[in-house]
Image 1 (cartoon, helix red, strand yellow):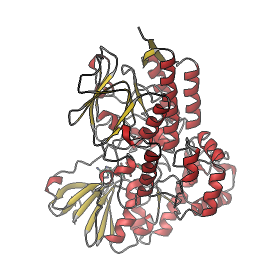
Image 2 (image 1 turned 45 degrees about the vertical axis):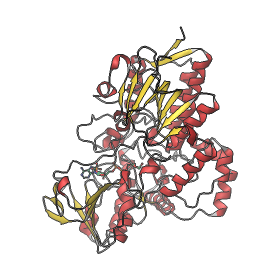
Image 3 (image 1 turned 180 degrees about the horizontal axis):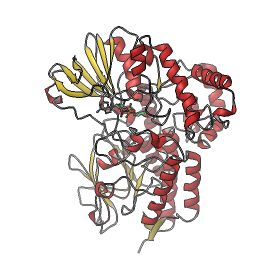
Amino acid sequence: MTIAQESTETTDVLVVGAGFAGLYMLHRLRDLGFSATVLEAGDGVGGTWYWNRYPGARCDSESYYYSYSFDEALQQEWEWTERYAEQSEILRYLDHVADRLDLRRSIRFGRRVAEAVLDDGTGGWVLRTDAGERYAARFLVTAVGCLSSANIPRIPALETFGGRWFHTGRWPHEGVDFTGLRVGVVGTGSTGIQAIPVIAEQAAHLTVFQRTANYSIPARNGPMEAAFQREVKENYAEIRNTQRATINGHPFHVSDRPAFSVSEQERTAIYEELWGRGGLRFRAAFADLLTDKDANDTAAEFIRTKIRETVHDPAVAEKLTPRDHPFATKRPPIDTRYFETYNRDNVTLVDVRESPIVEATPTGLRTTSGEYPLDCLVFATGFDALTGPLLNIDIRGDGGRALRDVWAEGPRTYLGLQVPGFPNLFTITGPGSPSVLTNMPTAIEQHVDWIAACLRHLRSTGSERIETTDDAADAWGAQVNAAAHRTLLPMAESSWYLGANVPGKPRVFMPYAGGLAAYARHCEEVAAAGYDGFRLTQVR
Ligand code: NA7
């Protein structure tokens, strides 16, 4: 054994991360008879749902389909309690899965991977944690999530701020009591929109620092009705098939009628009906909302009217009205009484595009329009999405080349699954795959199943190395770019899909916008053609 030194734990496969992706990957690997270890930075399973414990944290996809589909008994026995599960319920679910499948014995908790180096001699991977422990395996699978690297704004003099500050994605496990406090929230993305109404109810005063006004649809959360739960369970096979057959991995299809195929009156009635039902289905109202700007304008204007109707102060309503990007070209949030929150006496909205944040002070935040006194600050400022979680690890491939250098101009992958020059490394929901444009568990299951089948193929053909080629990655990159430009998505210039939220990050549209079903078909064809675009090397 040359991959490992004596103190190195060695397995066939190493998986980094024990969220939805890592847990299922481990289960599939075990099923296939591979030895595998999962390295997880947290002290428990859950990934996203382990770290994001901020007030109001819940999933924007409905609970009955934001879940695993691979285990019929699991989906029959688990009882969701709400239409949208809150963070603690999803964490309970993942804990249950880990116990049920006896996964914990292969997971090393509290291990943050700092470095992953391809051993040129053996062709395997050697990982080092930040505590200096070493792990080795022939194959490495990253299951690090797309939204796990916190984006903390560089506010001058933040270290002088006398109160506590938090990022929503690293929320203290013991919670935060805002009673009697003057709280500032920076950010009005999906997270801020969930947290703001809840914090406003507890805090003495809440000041919201908004950079970009956002479209948001009411979630209409509520308890999971027993009859609906029964109906879902009876029809799970069909529901899962629909999820796999759609663009976003949801159990409903985007309408095939264009927005202007109906009269204005009918269109408004359709929007009203979907607004009343709540949730992400609103985006599926018409076929062309994401491809035709005029069609999109009809949905955008409908939402703007709702904002004006809801928010009593016209000046505040105007600030909350999104105008700089088409509807759903940034991740569309859903909410519970978000716009209504601005009618409260204890809530102030500050537009930081109009009056930018200048610096933190010992007693608050100063913008160009003055100082706002605060006892604590909440950064709902999102993530260094997709590439951040991978680049936080110093990944070195062939010839010691660093992924950070290889991706200096933006990510380059084949299918979001592999990177040329990084053999035997698979990236679950990596950049270039549909990932964040979908219901994540559905995209994760598709990737894990594909990787598992690939590893089985390598074993059965006596192959010890798989590596994608430059040509395949270039061709795929062109397809990712073309798919994005067939939509309006690139029009949102400040979107994290483009990396625009992180100063200095290259502007490249990262997820594959051609739809999950088409993507999965393509991956199947690649495998069926003998792993077209990959080079497989047999054992010598
Ligand atoms: P998002 O969607 O990236 O939202 C972050 C918000 O924070 C957004 O309003 C940003 O404004 C704002 N932001 C970021 N940096 C700053 C600075 N420096 N100053 C002021 N405002 C800032 O992250 P979320 O956590 O809300 O959602 C991420 C995903 O998590 C979501 O899609 C769900 O899947 C769950 P901007 O729009 O960039 O102008």
